[in-house]
Image (cartoon, rainbow, N blue to C red; front, side):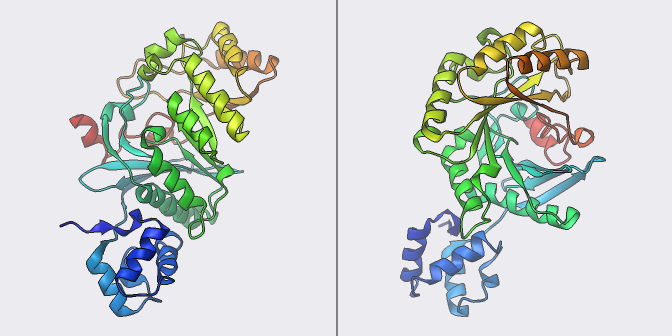
Length: 354
């Protein structure tokens, strides 16, 4: 019989398990500190626990962490990591250093079921939902890398790597609790952004759960006909349904929404597209990130011309919409938006099998 992963236990369950193993309940707090604050990879490392108790824990439970299988370093300082999440499956995370921020982009699933046409990860199909512990491990390991390589801590975490976070809802929220908690990494939830392709029911649920982190919607087109062409999820979660869900989310949380808009040449880069986006923005307090497209092998889209991007942004700003233009980072190692799993030496075999 397989042993249960101790990191899947909540605080109450862990206390009960500790007592069943013949120890005082306070030992559970010590274990949680080792698991979520000190990054212990084995029970033997838990030096303030009695040796006999460590042995009983090892007999009763599994404690395993993901491992870094590969690293790639970009000329702009970006670092992409491939993480082995067991069973031959790999996810990727990215450290993005800038003059003002140290941002980590993490994955919530191995592969993705949504198959957005501009994204390399969607070609993998869904291989696995990550556990809260596996999501947390990415943060902890890349946080250590930021300290080692740049002598800085993380300032921001974005759930914008592989997978659709809201289709792994419980694990994502549990991972945020661990990242922000004590024991945990103690980050502010306002430094965390969860990005979704648009699952209306789950967006409403975030509102009902009164989450404190930020929400980003990968929009990329503000009319249903175009969005259906590039994001199949829109056929069951159209713009009207998303607008209603976002309004509910804002009413419950008071949090401004971010719209992510990858701009493609001759597809969604016209002034009419900008007007449609501006009209959609009226549904909820928001800001817009206009993102430079990063081509993938065999993809049908190309980067928009800079002049088109400037005109597009200008129209949005004329409507008093807050706009940021996001330039690509880590393009030379396929670490930029939409490129994860595109050419990584470890992840590519998964892509070929899919």
